Image (cartoon, rainbow, N blue to C red; front, side, top):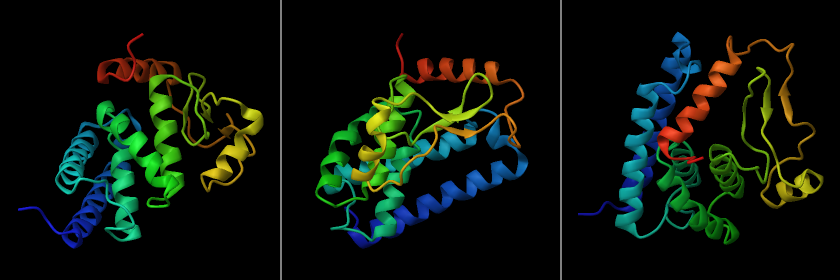
Length: 198
């Protein structure tokens, strides 16, 4: 028997709390910062599979019509965290763009999803929302298409203007000890998971 939207609302909030708890535990030990930790991936995949079941059972992604704003955001964040399941993230992209246009989900999270998919696929971002360490150990936003009109596009998705694509200069506090090795491992991961084929 399918759950009610009220029950789903509570379940989504529980899932995102579990996600945050695992992330915090790994951050405390420092394990979070050394590649994609298996414990984190396990939680992300478990939640994404459950979210897909909810979407299939209810016939729609959770929206402002069905659940609380907090639960909508939780569902969007769970989608963003399904990074080792490209098919799931890609499947939500078009649907969520339509829902964002209809004001049924927050636009900025859809911008995050569009950019995250492009980032993992090795394509230029649209809204410059995804950042990571590059091979030189600098935290920055990866390539963005049509930078001249970037802030105009960001405004359409309820995002603040972006002043610089460099987030952390080399003088910042933390940098990966082996940035080139980390970058190479990231590229290998994108092929292993199916984000990239070339």
